[in-house]
Image (cartoon, rainbow, N blue to C red; front, top):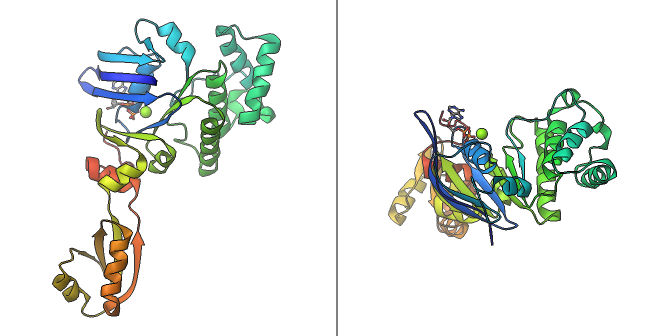
Length: 304
Ligand code: ADP
Ligand code: MG
């Protein structure tokens, strides 16, 4: 069964066409990544799915419920962490959880039991009774995630959960995301502009300027859209030999780069021309290359 189905979703803000007719489906229990630079339309998509923002066109269903018709049921199925925190800064973590719990009829002992369960996953006892404004970025993000999980949703949406954090907190949050994936049956939809984060995803959708440009597993995207490269430090005469061998290459400073279909092609080439090669390495294509090759834009620079 699909846990999220989006068909031809469109959203503009005045003249800005933020989402231009995107369609995707997320399998139940999958870890699904929406990858794109700033301005791609990720947050707009998440906010529409979260019933917070009205769409212009298209249809959305979540756990079989139709957006705009069954929004209360959809909110019950969803836990959402928005890109910009929405905790109450003057309340403690526990008070924020209690406030949210009240929406779901969760209070008293049942609430404390649920908080204790969440603590096993999130490990937030040491700051549970501190005000949000006194917490580090990573602790706040964990508190946001705890609140999103409070009512045991079937689907968890995380909008750029690691953006803006220091490297240690990023690692921490990422470890938490992976343990949620491992320890629960929840469907996870994650947005990110960090290519390394999509490597753990079951399915990656590449979003650019409101349009889906490609989708597949990270590995298939890499195979389809980026080449491994053989980088050679040449000796005298190598270029002539490569020309005679019909090998396409590029000279970059003192090195020679040969795009490869696979690493073995590189090994064979090195074997054939060994006497004209000082040293070499085979560099695996990265998801950055994939993004660049698909969109012509870099993930870090963004588009707006
Ligand atoms: P992402 O989350 O991928 O960075 P967003 O969904 O936030 O992308 O934004 C998509 C586009 O819509 C961008 O061009 C952004 O500037 C624009 N946008 C987002 N929110 C608003 C808004 N409230 N008013 C006007 N334009 C907006
Ligand atoms: Mg965003």
